[in-house]
Image (cartoon, rainbow, N blue to C red):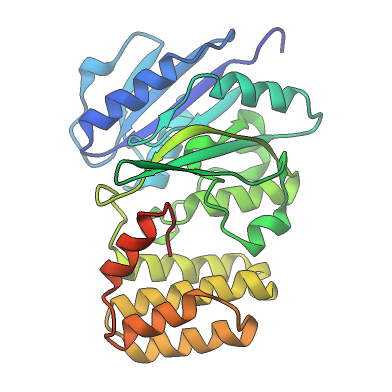
Length: 302
């Protein structure tokens, strides 16, 4: 490559025309010396062809598996750029995001994948979430989901994505945790380069397509355990996933399953703070919805 590498941005979308326009405008407004193009991929929704702008912005429909993973892969397949980036349709890149990440990648020989910090926006308030390091290792992602390693921060060399890391896995239930799976596969090859500054605004709230899909959440977590056995070997990582499963089953009203997963979580890490919350929901002491609202107000999830 000569000069700055070209960047193609995939924006999957479904039924969020207003936020999508903000997300796309922020991508195109990046002050970056290389070529930037975008592919807007409509998933199970009528495309707005008015967003198209020659080679700079293409508008297509998901031609693969319905869902977020298939939409991302549809966009990747249409790009001819050196790098691929993701931006969800309700998130917003901040000025300098692209330049900072590409610079960090170029400064780290052998690096393939970059992330950055985020600001979680919930209820009108912003909560910065940072990794506290200039790289994220595989062990970090096994131990913790690391919410700041968010799909809207991802920037990866196309050759690495299509030739080694692999595309987004379309078999994961509901396309939930597909970004965590991708980051784990990438970090297994090389640590992720991290620009530890909040350069993406990530919206949390009821507008999420995944917000209350508890059965799908449980199925995707069990998929992660089956496809990443290292998770079960990490006391903290296993306990976190098991407790999240306990909470999901509690919200579904399946008290027995919630208690069994809570017990497994405690056996791995008796300090796991999600366990008493899951058990309180399972016992009917507090609704899961109330727990989620209170956590979201502080920029946290379960």
